Image 1 (cartoon, rainbow, N blue to C red):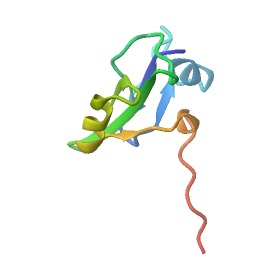
Image 2 (cartoon, helix red, strand yellow):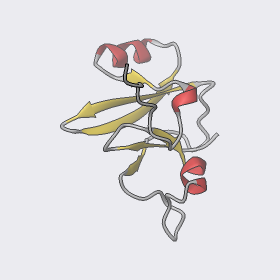
Image 3 (cartoon, rainbow, N blue to C red):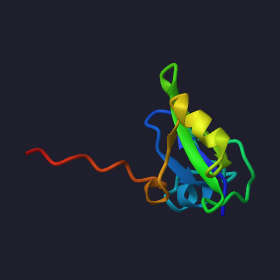
Length: 99
């Protein structure tokens, strides 16, 4: 359980602990730009919360909501995308191999 952050440039989502392990925090242990905190409980767990992102005006934003609720359905209808648990991390997304 940890706070979640979204990379506003490419949409990756990571926990504060993952960012610290990757050296992406400042001297005060705060994640550096372009990582921006996703508003929500500091002890949010992906067991209970869905982590979602959306690109708005050229930047990615993120939000948390309880899983399997009308709110999650509404957000997805509005263009929000749920981030699978296995995709949460600092590594860039895998690129498809050329054929």
